[in-house]
Amino acid sequence: MPRLSVWFIRLALAYLATGFTFGALLLANKGLAFAPLLWRLRPTHIELLLVGWMVQLAMGVAFWILPRFQASRGDVRPAWLALALINLGIGLVALGLVVDLGGWNVVAGRLAELAAVAAFAWHAWPRIKPIGQ
Amino acid sequence: MPTLTRLYVKTSLLYLAAALALALVLALAQTTKLPALLAAAGPTYFHLFLVGWATQLIMGIVFWMFPKWSKERPRGNERLAAVVYGLLNVGLLLRVVSEPARAVSPAALWGWLLALSALLQWLAGIGFVANTWGRVKER
Ligand code: HEM
Image (cartoon, rainbow over all chains, first blue to last red; front, side, top):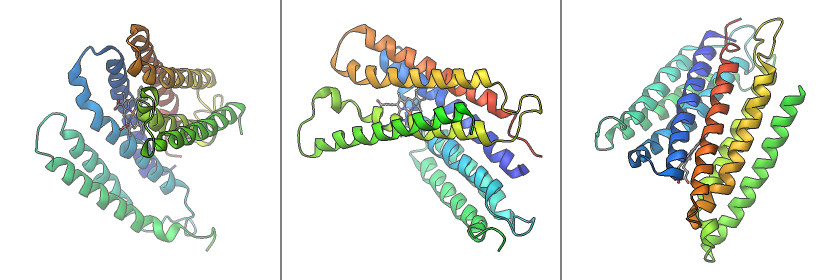
């Protein structure tokens, strides 16, 4: 698989591990109520798994296996930009765990994620075609 | 397709059906008052969907299609992959039972079962990552 996919997919796996860890802490705490503060992990748990794990894995696999133009994957720069933006976005949303920025971090994070999806679509759009064309 | 992948994929389809069946029941809350047991099953529905179906389907396909770990062990540690399957499903089913039960029953048992469910699912996640990491590589 290409280097960019390795980055996407390894980061997705790292978010899976972290997101499952947060989820397990939340669930154990839901059962045994040993540390009420843990409930604050909930939004980050959702962010890491939905965007960090699922969306990012899909991007990594798509970049790897979508049809190519002869051997070329076309203009790969927007896809690299998507990698940077989506992780910036996840980081901004997760920042809410450690500092209270009045929710602006979430707004900025979502904006970065939206831009990441646009950049990825920019790259992938022409590759969504019959093989060999 | 390897036998273990078939098991993952078929199980994931059962969860998808179960998730949507639960969603159907939960939708009745719009028109009738649901018993407390069901009213507490919102997160259970989400996780049947996202863990039982989506993540489990991904795990099965990744085991099958990702680049080979090595010539001798193309799919990494196959026994670990089977253990992950067991941990994930026992863990998730424990959640399906004890999360709503905990909401209506004061018995401490349900709380402990939820914690056990958390541990099993966490181990499944870590086991999957450990067994997949080495297969994510440039050719
Ligand atoms: C890919 C995997 C996962 C995804 C996408 C995911 C997503 C979510 C979502 C969307 C919610 C909000 C549910 C709601 O509002 O009702 C949530 C809550 C939660 N998740 Fe997960 N989750 C995942 C895995 C897990 C795992 C493995 C665990 C435990 C081991 C877990 C434990 C929890 C808990 C305890 C909550 C809070 C439930 C509540 O509000 O009472 N999650 N998760």
